[in-house]
Length: 148
Image (cartoon, rainbow, N blue to C red; front, side, top):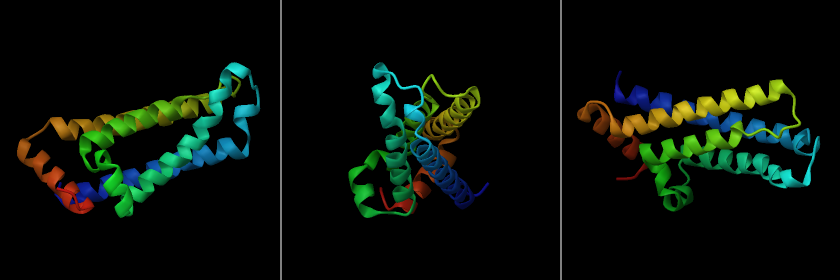
């Protein structure tokens, strides 16, 4: 596959991931899931949907080339940094408070696993493969986001 095609695929993966993460955060906030079976020891579960929305905004801002984000979050401009970020996001979205239905827990785990796989894919792009192809993809990503 041509490098430009890979860049387009990765861009759409990032946009879809951001939209789904944001939709999950909005759904949890609108339905007040974190308060359905609230226990004091689960007080930190209120932050999960808020973090999901913040991370959604970060991913969308990166994809639409906001200069402030590119300056402040340099790790998102490399395949390795973005891969670690997706692995972290997979951990965040896979958490579901214990009182929720099993279908919601399964959806959280499925999306978390998907984000982990995307993160692992980015890390593999960084470390493995023919050096010329990996360097070409890294150079194309760098050129696309205006970094060196």
